[in-house]
Image (tube, rainbow over all chains, first blue to last red; front, side, top):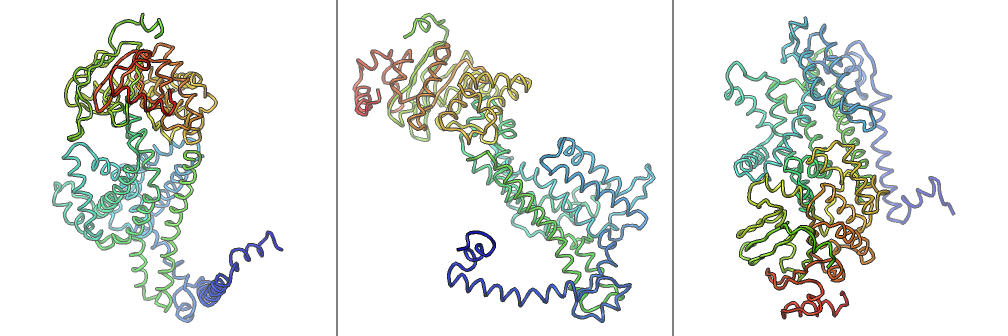
Length: 357
Length: 257
């Protein structure tokens, strides 16, 4: 008898009964039929480097990764001026390291990380990306921004603003004040009842109507506002679910100690409610990341739109160019969304440790 | 009755005058008149649904009342939220279901209100919390989360947490009802020790042994009314009202007293 090791595991889990063995064999057959061609297409048959599209035109049964390599700069920066792209590099590197610092639970001085990320970093980003004549940085119109820069910027702005907005809306919806409650309900239900693309068109065309001409929001700022407001409505409903699942005893325990309403919310209610709805919040973050691909309908050049633009280059018009491009785009979105999902799973495990039996 | 409580100053800690409360059309409290002196220990008993919990929850205004007045430590409870917070700071409450904060450690549970309401420096608040945890005999659990403790331990933490605000009055709402039988004693012992230190207490409980031993007066409620108030000995040995007799005979049948 095998008691341990891979053979024993396979016997226990894959071939424990006749139906189980048949299912296992069927899936092995399916994988052997489907996977090798895909892997070969993406690796051994692929064109990894080429000076132009001619090699890709000859290799019709493999991916054309050379196309991605040739267009990578455009896919990252869009039409951001060549000489100024270091500014984007700095912003991205800073953003990545601050995010890591902030999200790593054991990192020292995370308070500093938060302060930098939420107070210093946005200003720095704005100055660097937009430019400032006083600092000798050339102004770069947002119409030139594009590619991963715009996708990541949209996602980060959306995530950072939608959660606090959503919490405020959720609290507003449960408020004792009728006007606040009504306004919150109306906002949430209106936004949830309208497709995201409609919201984008509305922020794009209606925002300029409501503010003085001098304050007309930038073309790129409008979809950013749109995505933050859209996501906030969904976030609010997630947070409301967390608030409702909290027993009345927690409120009474806090009130009986003399904590006033804001402190009760900040110290007792929200920490528990938000922890409870982490999966839902993260789901929203992932959805938001996907939705960034839609901002191209109002003229922004996000990563996917940049990819579509890159396909139009006649020098790169092989039969597998488009498939390769979308495969790469898919991987780009997958890497980010899967990382978000894994981080949230890790966070849930960490927060669950010890707190509940 | 202990001599100390007779000598206790005669100032009034809590004064109910003609209090009525309705839940919709249900008349939950009917014309409650009760004066609790400083240092006095009151046990409230009665069948379930008789309004005992509602009565003490009116003291720190977890429940509103519609008619009459309640004055706590000289402050009349009105809709004024600042006055309510003022009263709540000086009135500790222990609940049947503990209501500890599960996301905070035992020590953090006990230091939270002093830090944020009394504006005490964190270190001082934690020192005080440790002293209180020692007083309820669980200092070694201070860094655990409530979910890791037994029911009896959780309820003792809840008592320490209520004491952390240094209250003048303590309210206990069936503190042992949710506990396994073997844990009831440790909680009652903690409450008895508190009573011996001269704390003003109102305790809603079915523990008649505790009532007999600790109470200065026992209040019997039925159907939203105070039916009988008396010192423990005459209350248990010579009840005046039929409803009291019925209630006592019912619990004596199960050998609770």
